[in-house]
Length: 419
Image (cartoon, rainbow, N blue to C red; front, side, top):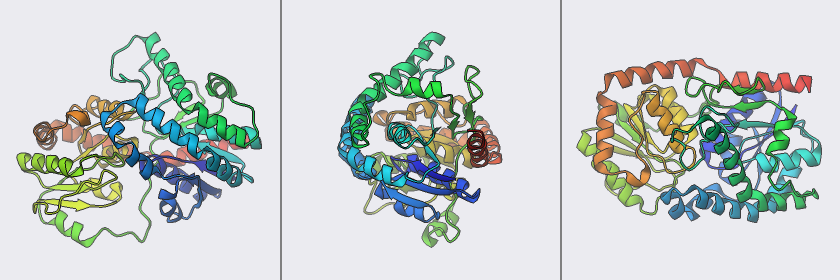
């Protein structure tokens, strides 16, 4: 099959789809990834085709840094929706060109609306493949709801998913109208494509581990929680020699990084985490990320890195501190070390609470409440709590025993054979 995977967003949004694409390619399929220019090398280094869908995810994140630090999901979605509207023309043009000979389109939340429009235009099936639970359930509230950790009644849980669907749709409706106009399609219904997608009864893939979040009992058999889609480094990749020397020079370090989350004051953030490491008596590995964490002269017990594969780095750590993005959370859990989550917005509080509920990390600390004192306290617990470390190691082993990519590929092939 010729398969196009639609993957807008940050690296954490894109990398699992590259991993899935690589698995599909290994099974004999031709795969192209439709993403922003930021990730062309990530895609092509894995031997996959790349199509630029326009814009820059990193630039967009930097423009929203004040809103992101506030953690207001509605403002973030509104800003993202305005950006998507501006980029709708190129997304439609690039998507249409990329999908001309496609037999199947695959995409998650970021590619849902453009994928549905291209599917309708080209009469090509569109298969949903998500990194976070989006199918309504009565067992837990929407992971994107403003209060995802609040205990709700079963009917309110289900309602929260429907309300979240509408919140997302209304923010992106203008962009979708522009895409559909470019493709000469009539506008989508007022309340979006969700009802139509449910009526189609197509399989839905969820690329996270059932060990972390078991599938709810009220999901039907067409919904599959496959396990994580991990991307290994290219065969020729080697870690920097100076990083290896630092890791070998002392006890296991604490990783601290906030991925694609921007920071309006990276120097202050760096000072905060350096103070926390000093108070806890730990060595640290700091990831610059899109937030631009920096310090001109770091103490000898702290090492600054750029982009390093988490699958290699995290198993060398004593614990990992991160923002709770789905991809980084997955890597931390698979490494079998405690995670300290400092969520900004979106699904990050949900994953932070799952880490805590599973007993493999302290209570999450929202980024706006993060201090050197409470971070040091969390690091102390992650390093010294023997039961937490035992649980984290056991969960990591169970996750590593899964093969989410192989299961996802098998479901896609089985569905395509019977379609």
